[in-house]
Image (cartoon, rainbow, N blue to C red; front, side, top):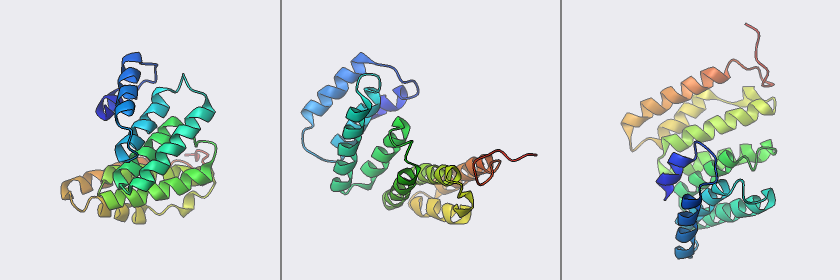
Length: 182
């Protein structure tokens, strides 16, 4: 179910068969936990054109609370990542920055360099939006990615190179998020 969502999320459409299967999965997985939290977060995006913003915010908060309570760092990373994709928190940059820090901690605990990388990009973007781009420390960031990938040494170099590529693209913006003149 979750991998099906990964393929569908590239285009946000109301996909009735997917929604039907997702709701069936949620009906069967009634016990609060990491899997139900992730499925609820997927529902937030899958129901984007069906539910109101308030309903989606309530669902994502339930999913986030459930993921935290499960003490599964992978669930926390997945739910925060889905929250970012859903743009529910887009207007609260400080909260997004805080969630980026929480996501980095969870990704590091879970040994997920991809989650660490996503959280660092989120944090860098938030700091740029706040006009505090200089507060982002790329050297600290590569250390975080390295820590997250300690169990998978081959992915460490890939994650570091992705981070450097993403940050180099962001470096074309000034501390206020305004493109620098060449």
